[in-house]
Every structure is written in C-alpha cells, then in structure tokens.
Image 1: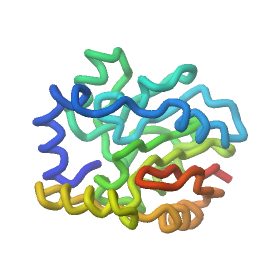
Image 2: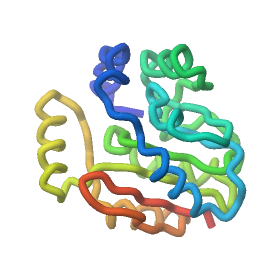
Image 3: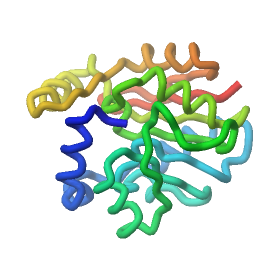
Length: 191
C-alpha cells in the first residue's frame, strides 16, 4: 500500500509509532461515516497501520488492512484488532462485502491512488461511505509536511481536497469535502 521505501520506514518505526503520533479524531471520523445511507456494521481501515484510527471508533467490526507487517503486529497485539496484510490497490475482500472504509493520514503513501479508490468502490456496498482524512499540500503546514517526507525519502503524493473529491466522483462515489485545513476530510458515498 505504501511505496516500498515507505513500507520499510513504517516497519522500522512500528514500535514507536503510537508513542509519537497523536490519537486519531474519532468524532471527525464518525461524522464522516454518518454520511453513509446504510448501517455500518463492517468497516475497513485501509492503510490503518497500528490501528490508531480504528481505536478511535466504537461500534462496527473493524479490519485493519496494511502492507507493513510491523504496523499490523501492533494493531493485533496492542489493540486486539483484526488485521490483514494487503495492498490498497488489490484489496482481499469480495465485491460489496463491507459497509464503509477509511484511510486516515495514509492516502499520500499509497503508490496507486486510483487503484485504491477503485478497490474501495468495489468492496463497499451501495450506500456505504469512504472516509479519507488527509493533509492539504496547499496549506502552509502541508507544504512543510510534503518537504519533510520527501527529505527522508518517502514517496508521498499529496492531493488537495478538491482534487481528491474529483477522483472519488470519477470512481462512482458521491463526494463531499467535509472539512478543510492542514488536515482535511473527504467523504464519498457509494452510489
């Protein structure tokens, strides 16, 4: 799901990740999921790493999908979450088998973003939602983050909220930009 260099980086920092990263904003994620027009019983946390975002939610059965085995081990061992090693561009789930998916602070690491959006559209049942929480590269802090990640060798590709919403529309989602800023949220409801 990440560029190869990104996977290696996350495998190396997995033991420290939760100590240095702030908790995910569960209220923002839940508000994004509320856009779904179907009940959300099964949720995928794509690029979910250590399960930081999944841990911020209550209710649905959540499966963390990540390419970093080190991060998945943290999700399983320290958070008790179900984890599946996988690529966002080839999700190992049946068509329409989940009610929603989220990608929190990880979309910019996905090497094939179009394939990841297409796969989310494939596995999310009609009326379900895809919630993407990302960083805006046009924001002053976003420009610093882009430069920082590239400086340490990450293959990150950041997108603006409007560009990401357009990509969701192209994949058959009804998109909306829920909030803007350094961190922003785009939600797409599966038509």
